[in-house]
Length: 77
Image (cartoon, rainbow, N blue to C red):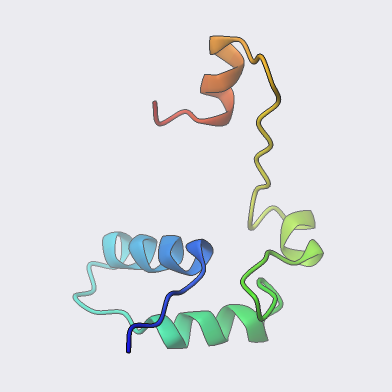
């Protein structure tokens, strides 16, 4: 059975694999730690605490954005 983890857990795993040069990271442990530390709710949503502290950013894309505003929100493109 394959467990589907929330996107924030997947992003955290990707970060840890790149930043720490680790070969493996346990997604279940990362998910559990993020919930225990108040970063995520049990259903994978960011908590108000994490948003207020800037640990997680909430991106909202308004309609009819200019290209410059789009790049401010999504700088990877």
